[in-house]
Image (tube, rainbow, N blue to C red):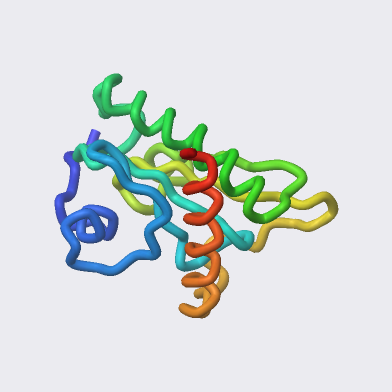
Length: 144
């Protein structure tokens, strides 16, 4: 397997070299909005640990990602009044992975509404800011 690349886009986000629309963060994970969402509220959950994908992450680090994904799934469903949630995670090029830092896609879904094709359009910054605010409010309420 190819080694982890410390210059991938998510590593740069974790180091603060690139901006993101943060939804949730703790000492182990970061969740932020995808700038090319397949649905409004499309959130990515990533470990702070350097891990190319599920094949090389330490189980302890993956458990933090799984817990955060579980939490974010409930939040996006409520915040976007969704009928369901799609959770996806890809590994290596043949598995559909494009960014080689482990990440989980969490997308609110509505009956009869198809996902946009991957990387088909960049979302307007104001929409991302609004969606991040909406998610943060639901997350805050869920923490009480």
